[in-house]
Length: 222
Image (cartoon, rainbow, N blue to C red):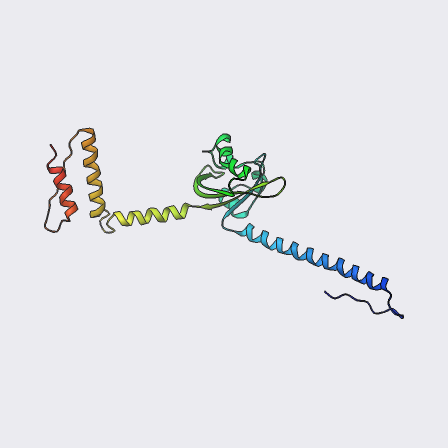
């Protein structure tokens, strides 16, 4: 940074030079602070617009301090409503005791973060599955920071993949590997509870060895 003056009719004294240096130093600190403020503002905007849900809450009262737009949209609560709530209001399967047990290692400093699967309850009473990463900040007093990913689409995709791997896309019936798995499980259950089951079917030359073996297990049951 360059700062200077040039309107003095006589030579500059050491005091003049020192004064200019002090002014330049003060101006530079202002520039640095503005840059830091702008950087923080840009980062805050990125977090606010993130599709991940981001929460900060007080480490003592557990009251929410800030909740980004993505979380507010998914939950249906306003920021003012959330500021009167805690994570326990969103995660009803946790009690105060079980949540405190979860965060105790973070408070003690023995863990940097904890990851877990939970459910969030929206304002309308509906639920959605979430993947949670919880951390504690080094601020004084410390704050909890929670980054949440909505697993609704992920679980729906996994369920669809499982369905495609088990059922025929044309008939909707279990495919051969899944049918063998179901039949084998039914035989084991019948044997454990001492009752009989019947299977109406046939063994053809095209049947796999596993299908034949399963059928034989059923046929020779005493």
